[in-house]
Length: 339
Image (cartoon, rainbow, N blue to C red; front, side, top):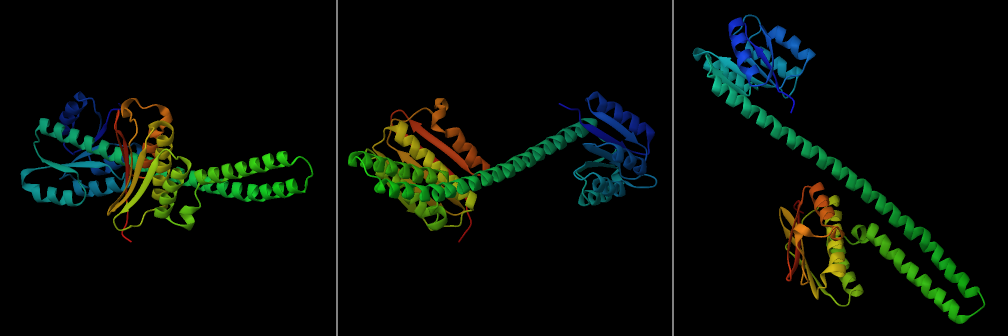
């Protein structure tokens, strides 16, 4: 880990020397300045994690240094050291943006403790900013992928939608074996069906034409038509609330992946899909009566990691409960807005 850099500012050379020695023993990188003006010059040439300044100095005082230092290096943490008679000035420094203040002569153990807390806070803020950055990039990536899916789905429907009827028309004009023509006609029907299924998997146009809830209902109904051994049920609970587009598509993808797992792995006789509007959240729950599995040792083919990453990318959550036997419940939750 890179050592933290601390800037000490005081017009008392003995105080500077003593405090520098103590902090360097704690493995900090320490620079000193005997005035606010010289400290600002150091800030121009280098970045610091923390500045510790005396409040009362000749020339630029501690408050003036605090304001100018944070203007030049936004986010710089600043501690103010002050005498007993200057507590009100120290409180004013806190109002102006100081992170902490200590009375002189300060207890070195207390100062080290507060420095450690300051750096812990900085690291926590850094992690939050990093998470927000990653989340923002994830949303952008999801948006780009979904737009490309939409474009490919439309292109697939447009191009093959024109080609297949043309091929059927030409087939009817050909003379020859009727059985062969019927077989080729059936093959064209199958190709058309595959094209429609692939297009819906890329991006269902029903999301744009019917809306979110009807699309999920259609998806569950379509699953039942193609998997006769499993009885699916779709239930919507509560008053619908407004979802962002990326939230709708993420929940739809989770539903498709979960139903695909039911079809290929669960051997379930029943699956119940519940869409729960419970402002400020929307919950999608898929519960099957299948064989279940151990979430800790689930095979990659179940796509659980992809579901979790997709939900995390939009700031949502995904929980999975499964027993062997006993079935599986997948629960995806995102925030929503009132209609």
